[in-house]
Length: 377
Image 1: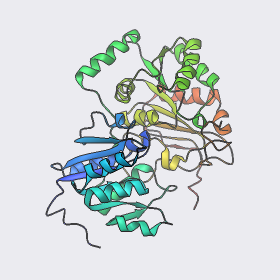
Image 2: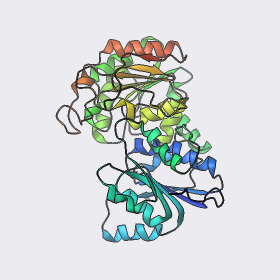
Image 3: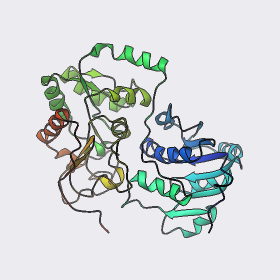
């Protein structure tokens, strides 16, 4: 199948669809940048679920963000399709889902996307496609395969959200208590419990940081259980608790001046890596090959991370919990989002504090590989 003649007639309007979670949307920004660098005059619209659009705030590559509800009745769905109908020359979908492919088919004359190996019939909605690889490729590299299908040069930069000048002044007021002292940001509570480390581990890490002359700022989501979890840690450590008080763009700005960030497998950890902050990521069930934080200066398609083992690349150190079952790629030991994950609970306080000490001591790129197990076939 020949490539579309975009080299002679560049697309005037492009639709990029990523109907998934916040982290997925953030990791699709290298694809958006690749498209915009190739066709700077094109209008690029980014379609996401409501509640995830904040991670695209201030993104210079995106002309419009379209945020649809995750669920809507038939009238709402019909209105969405009517709004999109044939408005675009090109549509790209980063998920191998019926909804993503339908949005692309409705919206554009030429569609590029993914299919799972078992759903070959779904290629009827696409003009070009790749098999969706949920195991062997990092999400950034997987998304950039769509650029390859169009002959577009890949850009490997994850683009974090950003503030305008007025918003930046507002954030400075929230951070006035920090003064000019150095600070570290800890993000103890992910949205889902199965990605959570031990509360007492966060307390000991925060106390150690204060002993090093580093103030501690705690961040977290707006949900009540997350705020309560973080409040317990704040009360025991005299930390500045900003859980539930910051937008994603404000969080990115906060992280850009931090001496250190420590967090689990969550969108904020990906933001920390993207802004260049020395980042420690605590991983358990999640596949690091696919979901490990993308270091700021990583400029190639192969994943920075292996299937098994901890390590460091650039500004990111990934600590993987122990166990022969790691990573199981399941939602915790009990297979639901509220489950605990024993592998994460077994990451020692000393290991995390040792990693924090190393990251605070040097910003030098130190490629460390603790295991050579590659992703399984």
